[in-house]
Length: 481
Image (cartoon, rainbow, N blue to C red):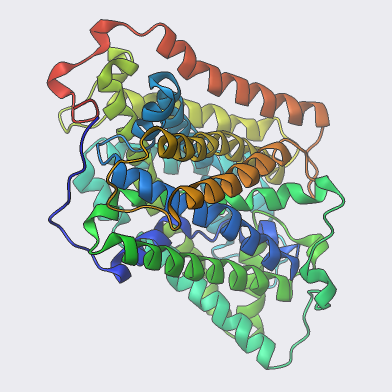
């Protein structure tokens, strides 16, 4: 076990806050929650308190206690051994792989809306399965080719993508909604305060809401910077709380902006954001801006895909050098890029895109892949929460640059909240939503259950049959040092 090392680099609270917001906030899922109207506020706050804050603070303590490269692999390995450590890092990678088709679908819909009739409440091309599949293939494999050229090439694309494709459109959407509200225009949303607390008696009605936990996923990735901030015990919680408030505010206001102008029973998961934008812009005689906004959203998606194609797979490669992956998957090209992992990742994404052919609608594909992503990622988070609790017990006297508030009691409280919420969301994610036509319920369960079993089994099989020859001593970093 490696001792703590204090970084000589110092980053500000504001910088870390912005990094956390950039890691979490995305606009593609706002329509999923808009149907809940004021009730969406409850779900966002519930997810922030029960999930986002526990993940952020526990990850920060683990990162400060075990600053070696490897992240969640190192944390789970220290608590439960290499087998589950490898499972955790695998899940962090594979859920991201399954997530790609959903964000690519968002991009395809964005392109379809560029130049479409601004008064349209549905763009047929955006629901054309062949069109969506082709666009997904082209964007994904194009971004993969860029990543194969190395980090410098992909960074040029992703540098301004978050600002152009997320922050500016989100700000504009919220501004338009505020103008709409204060000008006294009619609201499609039920404004009764009774709807603030949703009806929780029907579990099926919670399925779409359970995916909200995935909106706040990714905060653990920024925890590696906990030792780079001055006075982390005081300033890291400040950055986390500030980032959480900003993220929740963007999600709530963005979701309500869609609810203001679209009836809850007719919100399309893949097209809702664009239809809402169109309605605002045409009402305020700004329809000429629609193609500009939708192009910006496309740029944001492409930048995000380009960034995430290489990131988690690089972490998997780092762990693979410890003998966790066959040599075939450890191969890198002349640019040092994990070429075969990216190709395998691309094949998985391509197979998932083909699901568009068999599911009854684009919405159903979008939702089933979102649910499968949530299920796999939540297992990783369950391992993370358990590891935080276990390592507090295993190493009670360890010097920590940062620890969660209230020490061991705080870890048990936050870990318990995280375990409860992640486990609840995990169970709910298997249920088919009432709000979306998913075709055969049997097919829905088969896809989720088989997908879960297959993607959980693969890393366990790889670990079981690992060979000493898979260890590349010349590439082993400080995970084991």
